[in-house]
Image (spheres, rainbow, N blue to C red):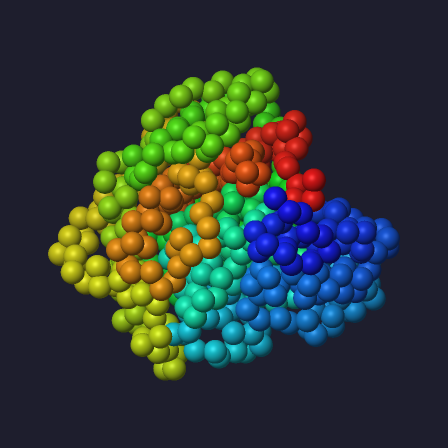
Length: 484
């Protein structure tokens, strides 16, 4: 595999692509950069200019940005530079995913059907995000409405994986993941309705944490969901960055129904009982490379003193069909109510084939939808009890290695797309229904060097426990870096 540096596109189109070098951003994570700002070792302006330069170099190949806000970022950096920044991530450049309302910017959810209208004000989540001190430089790409697990849109628009630009960066937060993994940004917004933080983190070698439901504010249109499944978060290169972000958000938003994360220790206060799940009953068989990384991770956890026990997944029979049915219901609601959700300029004729196919499937299956919804509600209520005497479960994030760009192309026939995505994304949707926390850690690599993530999950509200276990693991077994 060719390793290209300083943003130069790989000649073959299949090499690594990154921008890590000795500029203001260097090789540091967001927490270290914020400390440098507070200590007057670097200015927010220097960090933002370095991020803009890296984005301009990388994005023609990655295809990760859909809107740039460089002038506002520069203005914000100048304002921060004139005062001593005390916010936890003050002065650090970042980006929003195309899924939240941002003042002066479009929110199109990856779809040309959604009008290119500009928000007059930041939404509640964008305000909380900015309150951490992060300085967004733009908006990152996602697939239409986040239904699928690759960031590919109509018209051949794709977001590539910096570890191998012939591979997908995952989805739906693939734009944010690509920029962070490639070093253009140290941290970026992501959100998760079925694995959309954890999947791109797994395939790009990042930390991807899905918080418990109620931890963060959300967008108005998600409140209409019969079962709330979306969690706002970030993708980052270190566990401490994710923990810093989550605790920083709590300074401006009080969690609802779950305890605050609070201070995160370097390790859990006790040794844990961990259930290891190798196969999901909700999809295809786990491939050899993914199993090897999972088993190696289990061995490492045992070496740290935790008890790891092979077990079955806490997934009800029929969960895959139930979740796909709910997926379809959301797509049907989006297509039928687009004008009320997104304004009168919403154009249903511009919907992608996958959204149209999901909506048609839901319309055909309307009589059975109440049963699917009842079973999902039951799965949500029973999730915590299914843990039994386990504290944490570990399992693969996805069932097989990272596919190439085009495997989940936006123009694929619906049936092909549905079969491919539902066979690959077999482990992550359960935590969205349950509202429980989960994290993907870059625990290993495939034989070709591509990252493979391992998925850690816990009961709702146990976010701190997961972060402490993840912190302990990272300290003992540092994650591979794209520049190595």
